[in-house]
Structures are given as C-alpha cells and as structure tokens.
Length: 476
Image (cartoon, rainbow, N blue to C red; front, side):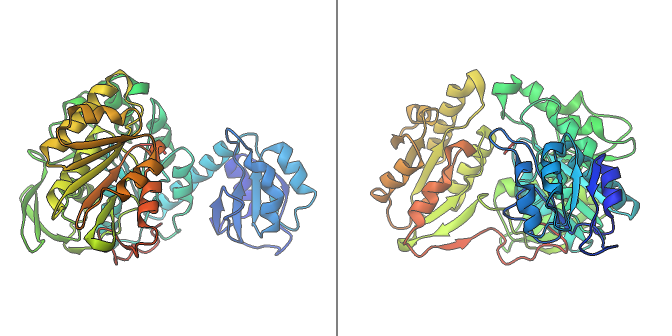
C-alpha cells in the first residue's frame, strides 16, 4: 500500500480522516500494517482492534510516538490521538477490524489487476504445511508471498494480504475456522483464483456437531469461488461431493485422483503423475503426511498452469514437526501447534517410521471434540500401541483416556510442566520423543524445559531453504 495516500486509504476503509500527514507533505502511504503497537516498524499503519480484555486503540498515541505512519482506531481513541498526532495520520472508524478487512479486499483487487493469483488453503489438518510446500513450489517460478505463521483468521488473513508486496505474482493464503460462516467470510476477502481443501476430519466437533457439518464449513471455500475458478480436493472424499460445482475446474489428488504419487525412491526422488504427465521432485522431507500434502500443493500449482520440478527445499513453520536434538542422542519432535485425531495419528505414524530406538509419545488433550471426545482419545491410545510406542505420557484430563487403551508403560500428568519433570527421570539415550496436543495444553513449555541446558540443536524439515521472494516467514 505504499502507493496509497491518506485520502485513498480513508476512502477505501470507509474511515474518517481526522489528521492528514504533515511530517513529509506528499509522502507515500504506509509500508506495512500492524495491530501491535509494541512491534510495529516506523512507517506502519497501526490498526487498533478491540479484544476481549483490552482495546488496542487505546495505544494509538504510543504507536504514533514510535513512528507509525498513522493510526486507524475507533472514534473515541482517534480524537485523543489527534490531539498529539505528531505529524502522523489519524483515521477513525467505528469498527477498525472491518476497516482493515476492507483495505485487504481492495489491496487484493489491486494485486489482481497487476496479474497476481491467489490460492486459498483450508482443511482439518495440514493446512500450514501444505501452504509452506506450495509457497516453495511456486517460489522458484513466480514472485510468491504467503501467510506468515498462523495468520489465518478474520484478523490474520487481512494482515497476510496487506503484507504482500505490490509486485507479487502469487499469494498463498491459509484459512482457519472454528464454526460455520467463517471460511465464507475469509473467502469474500481473499477472492481466490484457486481454492484447496486439504482434508476433512474430526476437528471442532463440539461446535459443529458432525463431520458433515465440518465438511460444509470447509466447503464454504468452494461456494465462494467465482465461476471458472479452480478447486483442488482430496480424491474420493464423499463428504465434499454434495458441495462440488460444475462451473469450477476441479483437480483431485491422492489415490484414484488426478494427481497421484507414483514412487518415492531411496535417494529422495519423488515421482508424481498428473494426467499423462510425470513430475519429478526431490523434496527435503519424507513423512507420509507431508508427501500427501505435496500432492495437494502440486495439484494447486498445476491449476495455476505451473509444473514444478527438481529440488524442493521447504522451511516448515514452527512447532510442525520441528526436531530438537538433545544430549545422549535424544530427539524431541516439537509438533505442539495443535492436534485433532487425524493429525495425532499422522504424527504417531511419523514417530514410528523415523525413531531409531524407543518411541516415546507425550500427548495432550485434543480439545473441542464434543461428546465423542473420550472415544476419540481412547482410539489414539490404541493407535500409539499399534505403532510400537514404548512409553506414553498423557497431559490433561481428556488425554488420560488414552492410557486406558494403551497396553505399554504409561503415565498421566496434569500439565506440561509436570510432563517435563516426569520425563527428566524416564528418558533414555537415543529415545525419540513426540510432543503433541491442542494449543490450549501448551506443550511447547515442556519442549523448552527439556531442552534447557542440554545444548540443543534445532532442525526443521527443509532447514536452510530460502523463502520465495516476498514470502512472509488459533484456529484450525
């Protein structure tokens, strides 16, 4: 938005312009957008959002004092900020979030006018990893920006769009939801050219009630695409069949689909077929769930007319399978970002396939699963036993159900701190330890405690890879 002046931003956001810039008459617009006055860089537009416990607009004066280009806040805060603007722009809007979403929608339309294509990704699990893979695939061929970290909500997605440079050719966006209507809202802002649903699984059942309702919520992405757009879907997913549209170009991935995995060779060479064409890649990862995410990403790239090939280095986002090497050959797998039954099984499978010695699983509560929660937790305990987990530590009252169906050694603790303390006395040399649970469990605290003072060396799948030019590097 560097080319947008204060009057254009006010008009686009539907905001009242109280103070025009005076620091540099005729200066360009903001160089970025921030919702945190403590972290903004000079030249940014600060948007003060109302939260459950605080109103960010109250920090408008602090943002201006820190060198913000301007502030976009509720009228009561704008009037106060205008008294001591110090040369910055002051914009007032009764709903700063709606104003920021309007700016994002307009910026997305300007990017489209310049030729940029938008790919939106949602799903019950694997969204972020698929986003990371697709951004890397496209980045070798196009100037590609993507959602940073977990910018995937009604707040995060607009920030991700507004962070995209004006010369972006592709923008890869992640969309999360907890209930009906939220994906539709995000799709209306992003206006994707390609929509990708990675999968449909038992997440947020407490709020949505059934897998059919989860599928319907994810399928809001399909409903929101313009006629002639492309949609990428998992093959043979009956939950999505009722939501498919004849006026969209549909590409499927996985067994029986349009994009399928032919072979993964010992040297890492991966052969993928789309129609009659064979695609050869050397990805920097080998986990089965990420190879499936790779198929989804390749299908989305093909929907854009891009055929990826050759080496593929992916820097995955934090707490998504990040490995931490400790003394004695102990390896922690930090997969703490979130969990549901589908992602929990995939993480246990990866543990089983990669551990050179004993397999240890530290598994926390899977939240928002509703009445089926006890059964779903017990099934994870059964799966851990079937995949050869030698030691199970459950964290939280829901996860304790896993122990009842686990045949091996198990311990139940109340929180992440207790898990770390217990593990200190249980770990052996060359153990591989998976730590995974819903975000509310906070298992990253156990990772930090176990790694403290042990000279850890962090590795992520694809470490050393460069993000694509312009790339930016909650909810499910």
